[in-house]
Image (cartoon, rainbow, N blue to C red):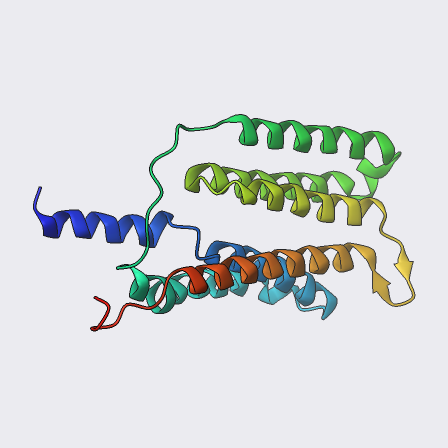
Length: 199
């Protein structure tokens, strides 16, 4: 295999699977916070745009932030695949579904089940992404997202003009955005941008 082919493979791996730059965190946080924000503004028709914004953020971030540092990034050696975190997340999510159904008497008739299933599917998607990318912090995000959506729905009572469901979703989005910002900040400090002098 030529050096050029090896470098192409490394570039592809960093672009698609590298998560230490925090961009995947920021994309998830943006979608979650934006989802809550659009519901708060009563603009649900624009929710579909959030996916495009998240993909755009991730793609441009990879091009502008991650790839210019490719010469200094040290890829971790492939670890033995660990399923423990994934299975623990599945058990917690399953327990959360059961607990929600048991504590929400009559909730299935009032629309609890569709929102609960949406929360579960979203959390499972984030967990699967964490498994594929080997980014274990995404398991925590999955539990946080499920807790925010299901908990907000179960406890949803109007507090003044504030809807608890929307509040929980936006707070969860802000937490993930903050965590992603910390990860990105560490990445920028750890890996300087490659210039002609350092290349």
